[in-house]
Image 1 (cartoon, rainbow, N blue to C red):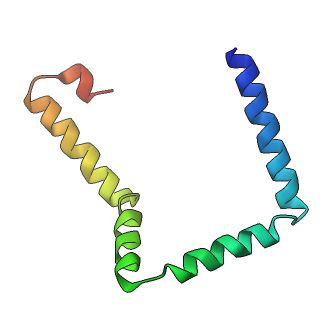
Image 2 (image 1 turned 90 degrees about the vertical axis):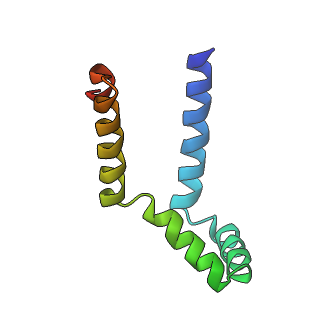
Image 3 (image 1 turned 180 degrees about the horizontal axis):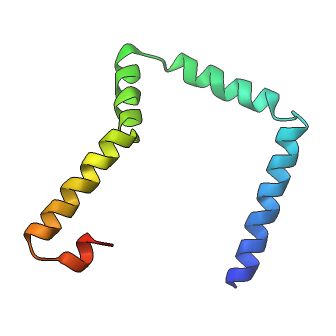
Length: 82
């Protein structure tokens, strides 16, 4: 069952990639971009920048270090080192 689902997912990905390479998704892409542009607000920009910041390497490093230190503090060394 897992192999079948993997093969199906690969086939769907290949079909979408083919459409993108042939630039047949232009109208769909433009309609999505226009819809996003209509929802544009200054507060939405700030929210999206905040969400983007969550993926910054410095932020992720600080979170991982904090979790590791907390695990070491509670004597969970095996969990802290994995």
